[in-house]
Length: 161
Image (cartoon, rainbow, N blue to C red; front, side, top):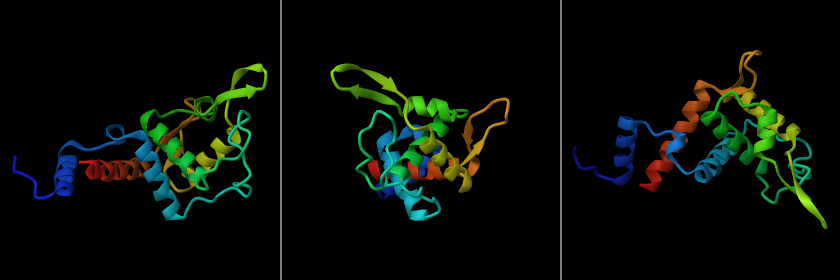
């Protein structure tokens, strides 16, 4: 092929020919960038006590990151992109953690299902996620949500090249 004039145009040319998806970029980078995108959009409504909420029984304090709700929404969207049909209970298990019980041995506990459900409802409201048919259960990413995710993945891929 022809040599690229700049790195960004080379990455964009490559993404047009190959199609960069969420699976092609680092998960942490994608979640951080997509969370920033969701915050910039301003369409997601935060819960009233977002600064006081714990993310699960295993946690002692609320998250230190002020934008943790956007980060959780972005992580859920990424997981639904990769594996559709996942429901609130499965996400609760994925985001669960070990509960430290003092001198007793630690045990695994699930994360808060209310927070996950709230995130999914906000993503549904802005058109990123939709419910699967009743017999299948769970949620899946919409065409619009997939396009948003792929666009951000392409930006990350272009910046890393």
